[in-house]
Length: 104
Image (cartoon, rainbow, N blue to C red; front, top):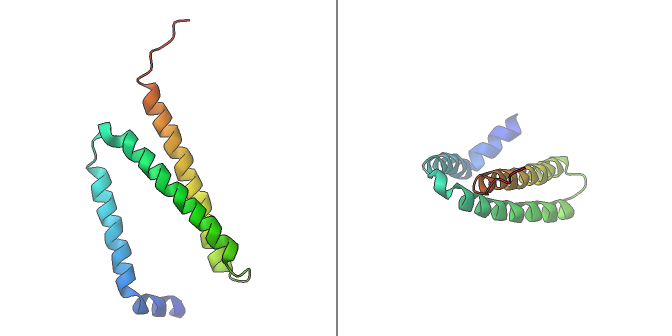
């Protein structure tokens, strides 16, 4: 725990930037009208695709004995993949609302 607190005190600017980025992201996304949701979701899917590729590259280069980096990289790949798949599901549902229904 002491190592973690030392790391935070050494990188306090980075912690501030991350916290402010979270607040800014919540405010920006919260004010997006629903009409723009699908185009923004497509952009988010593209960005998360890049995040997944980056995480895979980092996982390939990390020292096998560095379990912390391996766990964080694995979580980045899994969570990024879930976000991309979820984005495609949401986009597909929204686009299906505009399709004509077939008569049986």
